[in-house]
Each structure stands twice: as C-alpha cells, then as structure tokens.
Image: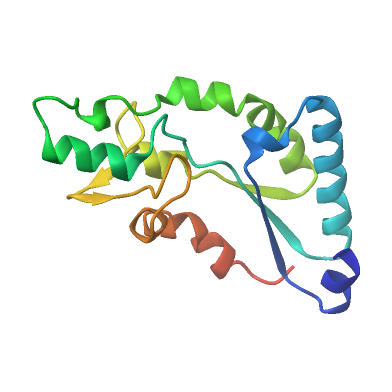
Length: 160
C-alpha cells in the first residue's frame, strides 16, 4: 500500500479500525506498530488522518428503541442506558493515550465522540425518532451524517 500511495501521490490516507479490539493482547506492540505505520505513510507525502472509535452502545440500538416504542411501560428507555463518556474513554484508553505521539509523528486525529455524545454524558442513539446506530457500534446513514463536520478538514486542507 505504501508503494501505491507514493506512486499515485495520494494526498490523504484515513486510518480507521475497531481500535478497541485492534490493540489486542499487547498494547505496547500495537502502539509501536501504529506509530511506525504513521511515520512510513508520512514519508510518502500523504497526510495521515486517524479516526477514533465511535462510542459503542451495550445493546442492539434499533431493537432496543423499537421495543421501547412498542412497550414503553415494560421496556426502559434505552437512551438512558447507553455508554457513558467515562466508559467510552476507558474502552479506548490505549489509543487515547497514544494521541500525542501520533500527532508528533504527523497524524491528525479525528474524534467522533463529541458528535455522538453532544452535550450529554451518554451516547446518543436517537435523533428525532431516527436511530443513529445499526447495531452496537456501526452507525446508520443518519448517524454517519452527524460526523460530516468532523471530515471538513480532510476535504478542505491544502495538498501536503
């Protein structure tokens, strides 16, 4: 991939993964490998953007919202049971702690969390009756569109 990026002079490379799961059993080795990947990518001239994980929810969001809608007296409002900021940060501590080093290596970090927490301490899963998640950690189109401002810098930055 590095050769393709260099040969085609690809101006931007966005790295995204299910980072919480990607750190594996050896967070130190993961951190070293990711930093080296960023350095190698930057050496090709591409800008490197790293998108952090979207906050997870501890249940299937569409199902929980639908059940609550059908049986509000029996099924607790799932919006009151979503992941807290504290839990999200704990789940992603390896990558969050690596941010200063990633930035020093030349990466720009894109954090979707502020868009998916809004002014609340819990993950938003519903917007005006529309579900923002298709399961526990994948966004619906509507959810993804909330992140549109997050990507503005990617599409408005000058060439490397």
